Image: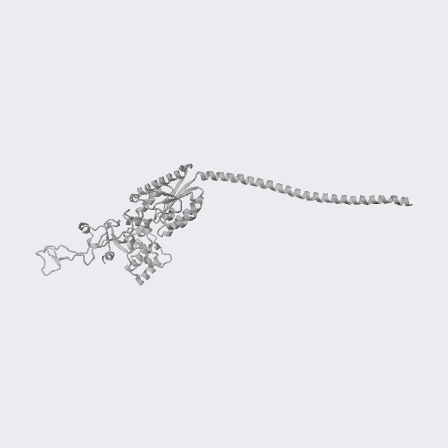
Length: 493
C-alpha cells in the first residue's frame, strides 16, 4: 500500500507543472494576439496614411503643374508688356519758355524731348535689358487754368487757353503721355500724384518710376518709406526739374535732370504795376508795363481819363446868313420851298461806351455786380415760369436764339426790364465752361462767385474762385486794355 501511494506523487507534481505550462502558453498566445491586433491597427493606419500621401502628392503635383504653367504664362505676358512711368506735378515742373511760346508745336517738341531723355536714361540703368520694348508712360498733373494764367502774367504766352492746346499736342505726340487737369487747389494735384505713385511702384510690369516732386518738400514724407525698401528704391528715380532741395538729396535716390525740357528756376513772381503806368494794348501782362506814347493814347484817352478831366469839343460850323441871331442853341435851315425849318442840335454828342469786360491783374475775368432784384418782378417772373416753363436766356437777353422753334425753353412775349434782370441773375448763376478765362464779351453766364471769400455755401459751384483778386482793368473788344482809376489810385496815394 505504502509503495503504491508513493508512486502517485510524482504524477501530481508533473500535472501541476503541465498546468502551469499551459497557463504560460495561454498567456503568451493572448499576448501574441494583442500584439497582432495592435500591429494590424498600425498597419491599417499606415496604409491610410500612405494612400492619403499618394492622393496629396498627386494633388500637389497637379497644382504644381498648373502653377508652373500659370507662372510661365504670366512671365511671358509680363515680359512683353514692361513699361516705365514718369509722374510729374505740373504746377512745379514747368517746361522751358521757348516750348510754351511755340504753342502746339512746342507741346509736341516737349513730348519728343522728354521721351528721348527718359529712354536714354533707361538704357544706361538697364544695359542688359531689352529697354527698346518697354513703353514709357508720362502723367503730368496740374491746374491748367492756374498755370496758364501765371504764364500769361509772365509774358510767356498771350492767353491762358494756349496752354490747353500745348497740353493736347503733348498728349497726341506720344500715345501714352497725358496732361491731367485737376483744377485749382494744391491738394488736388498732390493727392493724385501720390496715389498714382503708390499704384505703379509695386507693379511688377512697371520696371522703373520717374518721380518729379523736387520743387515741393511736402512730398518728402511720401518718399521716406520707399527709400528704406531696397526693392523699391532701386526702381525709383527723382526727375529733378527745379534744383532739388537738401531733403530730396539726402534720400539717396537716383536723380535725373532734363535741362532742355524743364525750367531750372521758378517762374517770376506776380508782376508789380508801378504807379502812373498804363497797360499795353497786348493782352499779355508783363512785369514792366510800358507807358503809352501820345499817339497810342489818342484812341483810348476818353475811356481811360477820369470823367472829370475828359473834355469833349465839337467843331463849330461857320454861321450862315440865314441864321436867326436870337437862336443861340440851334441852326435854322430856311428854304423858300420848305414849309418848316429843321432844328439841328449843336450840343456835343456822347460817344457810346465801348463794350468791355473787367479783369483782375492776373487776367482773370470778373463779372460786374447786378442790381438788386425787384420782389414784384420776381413774383411775375416766377408765375410766368410756372405757367410756361423756364425762359430761354438767349432769346430774352440777346434777342435771338439759335435753336428757334426747336428750343426747349420758353420764348413768348418779351420780358419787362425787371423780369429781364431776374433772368440775368439766373443766367449768372450758371458756371461758364471757360470760367475766368472766358473772353466772350457777350457771355451771359457767371465766371466767379459773387460772394468771394465771404461765401458760405456748402457746395458752391464757383468755389475755386473765392480767393480771386479785385478788379484792375478793362478789356475791350478790339483787344486793348486799360487800368481802372480805382486800381491806379492805390499807387498814387
